[in-house]
Length: 575
Image 1 (cartoon, helix red, strand yellow):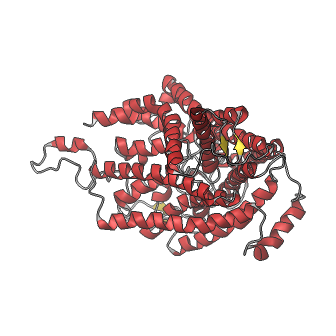
Image 2 (image 1 turned 90 degrees about the vertical axis):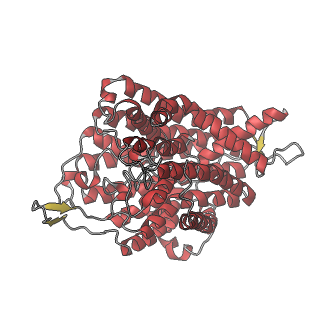
Image 3 (image 1 turned 120 degrees about the vertical axis):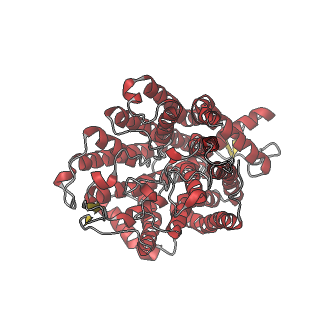
């Protein structure tokens, strides 16, 4: 591996990146804790009247709390309604307005896949947005779901935290109140500010027709525009990742400058990092939240260095060309294939690592063009279970599931009933945690196996052999973990992939979310037990080390055989 990227400017940039994320995360995390605890904030006088108006118009009883089954039913019904509305909107988009390019209706399979993708916070895109979707579909369909799916994930996290805090009660909050507060007080204000900043830097925002121009070659061409800045803001903030353009954040109208690139990659990790502070404040033990954040950063940094080093080294096959006796043993300048020159290798690898660590899925470079090891990093970050930062809400509740498993294993080591935050971890919690942890890998491996063994699955491969297998493995890993990024060498807009990936996204979202809610209900019904000499400290170095080991063993070792058939084998092929 080459460490040539460790120049002073690059080191300063990476240090500045982490510093900005952490400095913004704490105040935002404390603010979000107040929102989900129902406390008054500086935004209450500004938006309180609107919150009350929404409750009155919609008939929401803000003081009526739900048990975990009622909360789960509300989540499922809300998601089902969102799916139906979005599916119909996409299936019949030609009858709605704001369609200056007169795009037709989406096929049934593509509408199904896209609707599932956005209601599950996956934002997998088997289409090119600028040649497929009307402005109305982008705004009223996709952008709306970017807010709602993110708020739903944060609401489920709030329920799990309440499960640790409350005792001897079935009450865990009200889904509709959590949803409204998450959108109104957190996502909407931040997205509005971010959209204005991005628009000031050149991210387009209009409702006009595409612009025609006459290039030097003489053949008329078209420049796609649209309401991009508004969607870009919530796309990054809510770990959604669905781009207005097919090139996503590599497109100059989504990400025009190094400054916008820095802002957007900070936004990828901002809320997932801030929620660690939210957790600490809501349980009244900030050390617990800091411990989880430290664990995330400890895993993130080595993989970031690995990705940058692999891309900086480039393709060793270039040395075999023999064109010049003075050709370097590494690819000159590193592997710039599939990367924007205005961002370069370090920014591309940082983005790829962050977007897959945080379940965002947005890209500013072609992951399919990364080196085998550079491409393996985003794949592995997803295979951790999307808990190394993870999606808004889903990342932290996924991490807390691993924490429950870790204290159980540690409890077995010392021969006592495991405890976490004053609650005994017993058989029911472990069963639900096992389901939540094992469901995504199961569907990744089963889906990949079906794809490589069927003609319909192999037909989507643009590359044969090792790299083609990696493309399929990446696609199912992304879908099952609700990430949404792709190697982009896989032609996923076929009936086979539209339906199978759609169902994998559903299972990856709700077969994790429902066990988490069940755990919350079980914990809230228990009484708290006092800390004793035998209680395992869960905020120190030892516990953080054990937690990382459990995540690595359970989350990644499951995929070692498939990784050996894909990026690892391809890396040896290039030696």
